[in-house]
Image 1 (cartoon, rainbow, N blue to C red):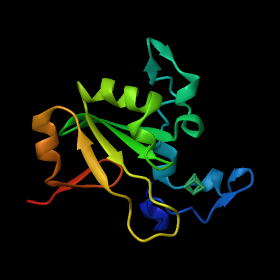
Image 2 (tube, helix red, strand yellow):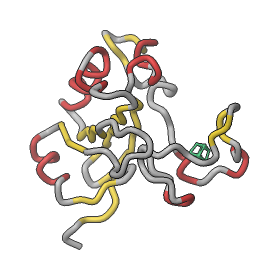
Image 3 (cartoon, rainbow, N blue to C red):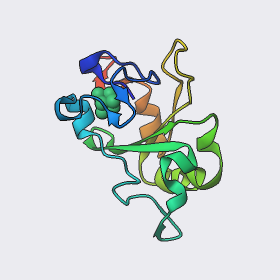
Length: 146
Ligand code: SF4
């Protein structure tokens, strides 16, 4: 995902990635500090259980979450493998979420390619319709009409 403090775009590998993880972990930007992987938080359940298959490196999707936006609580599904959101447990998780929440699905984009990956919305129809009028990065940003 984008980290505006260091001008990292979506689907670009961060220049600070190192073998151990983050090379500037103690001084990492605020965007990185506030990110919470929803699998790590235990928020992704399949059949009432937190599913190990939903770990991002297993299911190919990272789930992000922004609470209390003008659209209510919003989930973002970041594909880290092509078409990962359309199948398996990831699809089931999204189907469960979209009954109640706006879900932004970010289509996988290979590192180094131009563009930030396409986004599409699923969820309650009135929220999906309104979402088209908003500029998004990690969460709700500003209305195009403001
Ligand atoms: S946590 Fe570190 S490696 Fe990851 S995006 Fe932030 S600065 Fe880059």
